[in-house]
Image (cartoon, rainbow, N blue to C red):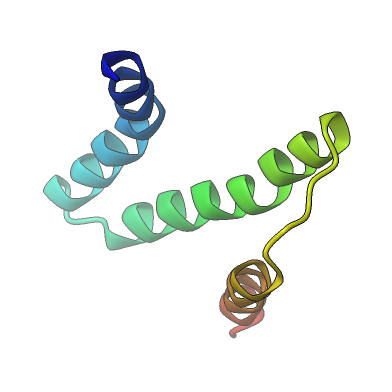
Length: 77
């Protein structure tokens, strides 16, 4: 249990500290860019790599919800 907790903290720590740095320097674009970039990376690269190594069935509704959100956000002017 402790290993999983430490792994989760190690995985999320850069996102947390980058967001805190953006908030403390009054740069909201840094916060949004970091969080959206991390989300897009997980949705595309990590899910693709896992599917490539071990095929699995993606839960369609949450995956399509996330993809639609990122497409909508990226196509705004």
